[in-house]
Image (cartoon, rainbow, N blue to C red; front, side, top):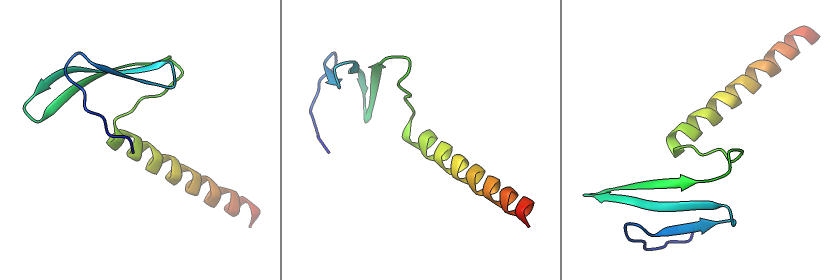
Length: 71
């Protein structure tokens, strides 16, 4: 993990075409802005984890249905 210190108004560039900007600091919260190509998905981590769980559940259900059709 790379840890960087940034101030309000400063940015970080990732892979030449993704910019992460510090927009606001309020207490213990940081508001960030992300500029990236439309084809780059961006999720909050808790949403990403939920999507992964649902995708895995769908794959498991699909496998069960395939097995039922074989038997």
